Length: 364
Image 1 (tube, rainbow, N blue to C red):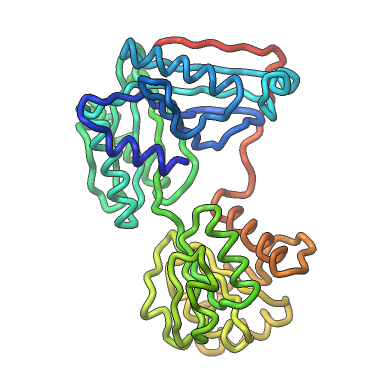
Image 2: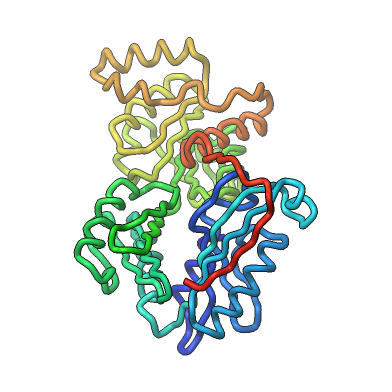
């Protein structure tokens, strides 16, 4: 849903304004993504989601207030598990949601348009928002190639701190909220290009991996040396299907730090060829179907031919979380679950929540 929110912000029409609500801080178990965003327009129409239930209804009301006043608000919402159940949420926790007005004639629209443009170029960005008490936020875009968009954050010291914090966030998923010495806080949001997944092998398992990974936002390319197994009709969810010989296939593929590679070919010899080439690329994830015994045999041969043993150690094999999967569909679930784990990190932050429910909405 974040793609839909970004696209709408980038394409705001003249004199159009919307309220943008962003989750900036959370603790405990929460009923939304860590990157939740929602837009509310003047007619009360909603794009995206901030979690559903009573919380979302509350933020729609806040959004209308922000559109009328032009003043941003920070909403703190805390609920116990029992309160969450009564109001339609599926868990308790505490969240802070920042709601602001974005207009077509402001620099903010330019920044969100630049985020979309960078994603199309497969460039990672970090949007830094300076949350100032009692004033409209200042926003600045940093690109991984060093370019910036926007008027800055009003202070050389603050901008240096923003660059320092953003340096480790390019290509990451989780946002960060940081206090700054001169007052206020910096909300840093990384925006990466959509992850690309190359599935080598268009057989039964490869087809199911393609289907499951496409459903969660991966741009999947299925590669096979057999034309009938690399057809669009066989893989309707795929972004692309390619018939390629495996020995030099990576000479013809684009691989970057947001690329995932799965070797699921019809034979050990093909998997070996794929893995040996894949470890020379900057792919963030490489995995191979098969057994531990198969892996040891293949790894030994690859190292004997000069393959990087340290890079081989990062390859996930046998691929997939240990779910006891048996059918192609179940194997695909275990594989894609591991892709999610790699992309998102092992665990979500869990903090102890307060016992008493509390909601407080304040202007900044």
